[in-house]
Length: 158
Image 1 (cartoon, helix red, strand yellow):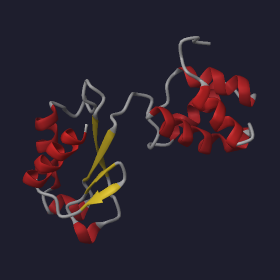
Image 2 (cartoon, one colour):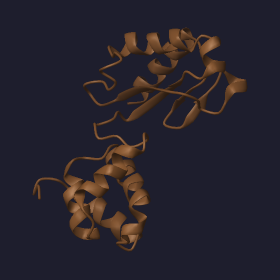
Image 3 (cartoon, rainbow, N blue to C red):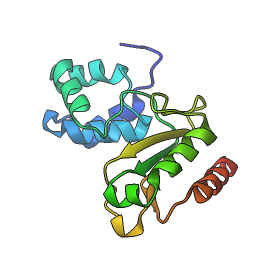
């Protein structure tokens, strides 16, 4: 086990779930919320504490699209590219985000770990299209100009 990794948040999560292996999805969700992703160190630790194989934990973590094994930004921006958003021009919004943050399809998180930009199939807010979310908060009727202003505001908050 990595001695420099801080396991205290993970210990609290395990206590909250009473060390039940059957709660692995909820444990991984809480772990991702605490660390903003699933660090590689957590797999061996969870395996030891829950008495289930690392492979099983890893298979759960990689099966669900919502889990990330890569560090994510403080602000996770999801751009909807479902039909309603796509026809209302979600791609120029995505392109503006990537340009402003120096990101690409392959590089989704800024070097300072402030922003992560992802595309999703649908955010379930089709009547408000085009839509993005920032840490699950919905931003409706977006445009490239509005997204540039939003980024400016988020950067000023820091």
